Length: 268
Image (cartoon, rainbow, N blue to C red; front, top):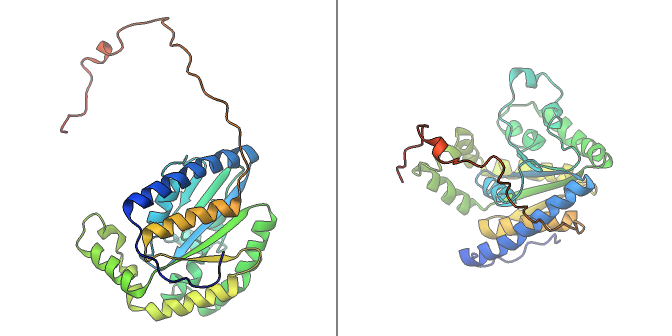
């Protein structure tokens, strides 16, 4: 761990990235076994600027593990009913049970960012959140949940490059919302809101860890390595699986029995 900005490294080559990612994803599978065996409960929060790479990082983290253990929560804007509830209520219903890792793709920290900057909450509600969040997180941690908070930080020029790449790419256009465009124009306001949030909620029991994400590949690897290092899973002994012989009882031509059924047209 470090609290000092390190010099930028050259962009990671794809071949090297895929090699390292494979190793880390194998470790994530072992982590998954340990979490299930020990009944561990984990929350991982991903926050950061728009286009900082949260989605790609979460995909790299979860693509080789079970969605029953690694649950990703990406909540839409609150409904009128949810707006009338206690602020944390709609997040708490997704908290992990034993043997689960819940990943929040944005979290209750919306109140410290987009809600505050876009006037979706009052200044008093924003200040109240900054005061209460550390206390709420103390209850979460004291209740036995391991809480990991990650802020992905992308530079101004790289964010602009990613936004422009989304404008004309039909496979990325869905990523560019009117809210993203508005956030682009408010770079420095977002920076100040980020710093207010970090000052108020970076605590000993629930610290923030900042990841430089201009190089998306390095960021993904560093995040996964950080999660593994933080949780420090023990070893789980797995019994070797041996497939039994298939029974011939009731044997029949199970492919011929599909004749006359509707098949998907083989276009490819």
